[in-house]
Length: 192
Length: 274
Image (spheres, helix red, strand yellow):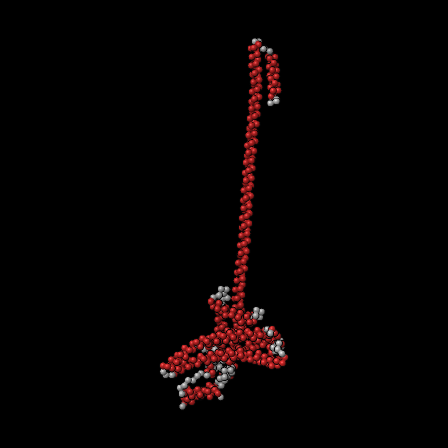
């Protein structure tokens, strides 16, 4: 059979070609290609792939740690601001109470001053009134004295019936009388 | 030679109309560009997947982080969560606060390089977990093996050899047995298990996908009768939970591979602590 012979020869050729059908016997070229392929890949991994992955990992670690630090910083800042505000608030409260105190003191002082002023004013007015009254009294007394003298002289002359022509003498008499009267009054008024 | 014998057996079965299951050889697809063919190989799908993974991881993560926004977008958040998962779960928790920073890129690259290459096995159209081939798995485990040994000698000098092979607090005569065992376990077996665990799981998943696909195709398209077609549909339905199981395994293996990387590095840093 021609067909059969052909198949046999093909099979023989194939069998001869792969005499090493023993799976433990390597094809050195395949081994070489695999080895070279592995080394090429290894170099690519060392130079490119591994550094990039490590870099990416490092970046992420830094970003997370940085974020945490940033948050901490922000919190500290907020804390400081809060403390500052509280300080300011306390300060302004103290300031307000101080101002209130001052105002109260000032008010009290104003009232006192006004009172004092009013008192002194009233004293002054009283003083003035006293002086006026005194002056009026003195004037009245003086006027009265002369009038009383004249009246008394008139009266006396009417009583005596004789004109007391001698003015100088009658004046002296009246004056002496009045002076006695004054002295009398004064001795009477002194113990009062 | 086992290969041809098996193939002819399968071939005879195929001629008789039987089911021809896919072989391991079929996980090695023909080259897309038979560029280096005279020296053993050409440019295959496996290599395309490696390049795709490098481009995709670079683009996705640089695109997601391009803005470095403090409040991340959804994409950036997802990318940062993924980065943070590697950084904190594998880096900080295992290497400790003091030492983990310089190792973040390595752990990140290991985890996502393996994860993307694994997930290619679950994406229709790509359907090729790079580490189902032993070569790439050896290469990865080798790079990490060199890294932790170099780190150990750099930190502890020649004493590192003693720290890694001579367990403390063990009676002298026992050391005769334990020291070679420790050497074997730490320096020889460790990188092998590190790579083969990944490779075996990915290969098994890949084969299951192939098996389910070819079996369903065989039952539905190549066999007559409604019963066989129904059986084929059942196979397809059954492969759905397997697909999700596979998805879990892909993520889990990437996690385990990166986690072991971190543990080996931690072992080198603190070799004198235990």
